[in-house]
Structures are given as structure tokens and as C-alpha cells.
Amino acid sequence: MTDTSPARPGLNAQTLGLMFISGFVATCAFDLWGQLISPGLGFANLSPHGLAKSLLGTFGLPNGDFAGYFVHFYLVGLIGYPIGWLFIFKPIWSRVVGDMHWFVPSAIYGFGLWVFAIGGITAIAGLPFFLNFTGITWVALVGHVLYGIVMVAVMQMLRRT
Image (tube, rainbow, N blue to C red):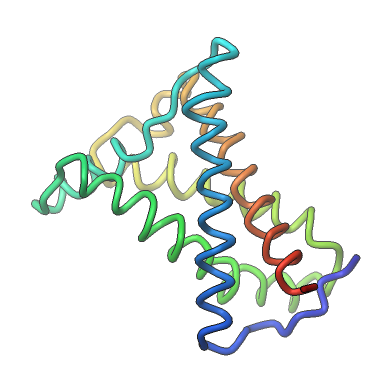
């Protein structure tokens, strides 16, 4: 199935609902993978709120646990990453590549989120580049790609109803 939705959606209650619901489900999938499944399989445990806390501390902002979870879950998961898909990545992808099935661009978007978060935000937060390519780096790669796929899958499902 190709994605025939407009390149840039209108900024309205429907778009906000789409962002919040798809971001919520995708963030839950990300956290389920990174904090339950991955450690259960013997891989690293993700702590994305820790990265958010480090970033906040770098800017001299309150960086307690609540602030870290708030940034990770609400600002990034429900707002930031969905905005990036709907208003930046998808319109550029559609213009350059054209409309196609949503799966490949959503996985590529997730990969881009990983580069942004683990390659860029960690450096700004004063952490090692790509966290020195330790186990958490690769668990985060799977988590971000999973986030992208789940977020767009939920958007597609909600648009069909």
C-alpha cells in the first residue's frame, strides 16, 4: 500500500491526535524493546531519560528524573519525532523519491533518529560519540528503527479508520 496522504498535513486537532497516538504507541514499543526485551535477551538496557537528563544538565536546566522522563516521553516521543516525520522527512522523501509503501522510509527515518540521538545529542550532552559503540548503541539502533516503523504503521492504521 502506498502512502497517498498529503505531503504536509494541516496543523489541526486531527494531526495532533495522530501525532500523540502514534508517538505514544511507538514510544511504548521503543521502551518495551529497550527496557524489557533487550535486557531479557542479555543485551543492553536503554535509559533514554538518562540521555535527556544529561542534555538538560548541559544547558543548566533542571535535570532530575521527572525532567528526563518528560523530555523523553512527551517532548521527543509524542511531539518531536512525529513532527520530524510529518513535516520534515516525509515531505522531503515524497518530493525526492515519490510516494511508495511506508515501510522503507519509516525504517530509514528511524535510522536517522538513531544518528540524531546517539550520534548528535550524546555529543552535545558531553557523552562519548555514539556512546563509544558499546552494546547500548546497537540496542538503541534497533529501538529507533522500531520506533519509526511503529509510529508510521500506527499513522497509516489511523488514517484508514
